Length: 448
Image (cartoon, rainbow, N blue to C red; front, side, top):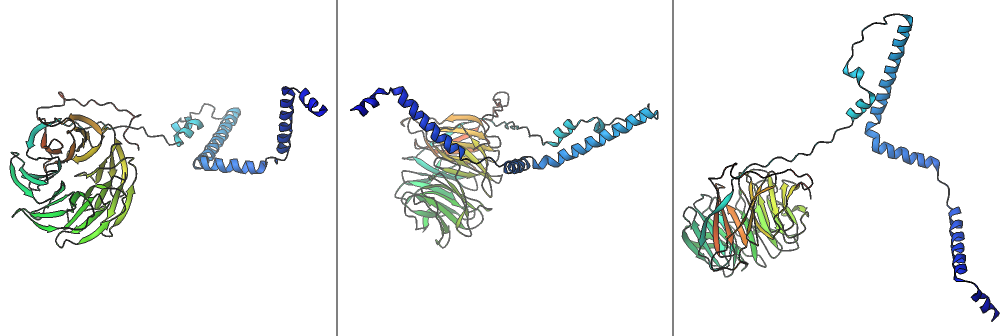
């Protein structure tokens, strides 16, 4: 009982103080065991750090010291000459080198940082809606222009391929054969062939002299969403929902390569004669550059944070563009070097198109068209595609687009079951539609 009473006599403050004292004594004893700093090691560390940071300029400092020493000696000689009375009034030629101070010389040695300049965008006339073509009974999902620039073909969710006169917009032929939505079209430049693919997993070759299917290319395990023809050799490349792109021999129908590596739907595929000959964009947020001869991936670009639904080559420059809801990005071939971002089209971008004048246009799910100057990334025009009578406002999506071979007409395939043609406004001038542009270094497009 007495021990319990003794414990109760101590106040809370006394117990806390004792606990703090024990803690202090414990840590003090630990601190005493820490060895003292090694001065030699610290000097070596600082010397190494200084050499690493200022190594390129150390010899310049020695040169400045030697120059200062030489000038001091010359000054002493001049003083001695004046004391002896010889040539006290001699004129010494003054040069820029002799008047330069060591500080100014040191500043000239340090490389000056280049001033960041943003080039002024080129003026482009605005685009306006020229013609609306109706005829399909479902969403128009793809469009392709014939090399002679006389007609173009469209594929739709109504399973029909329609061929239209480009000049008048009149329907020439309707091709039936697909059993599901037509998602991709390509017209050969060397043969009278039209190629089509769709959600029925079929890839067809149409002979346009007889308007009949003459070849089928079997191999895809799911819907085929995109296709392209190689410009130099008789090779067809298709891509789709089975996360692969397949390379076909156009004549023998042989599956030459199956390009695997993507982990989600391959939404877009393009090809060119030079390396990389094939580029794919996928819903796995990556872009892959492929070696056609080896049938394997050369580079994987992971800059996009959301699905890449469209990739397109520049017709003149050795570059390509890619579209994603986070940004439109420009790349330089052959290694896929990042060039710049184009921000502002905040929607799900389904398609891109570029003409030889450097006008890049992007089309989105909400029916918006944004026109960009390719070189500077300046967004010079924004349009909202008008929904046709009888269609809902939600059916304003733009699924595909392409320029005609002259680059003066833009053809869009849309969700309101129509095909629209846009042309430049010939009455516009730089005075009526000036470039409203201010350089903004804080929001420059040249960043990730």
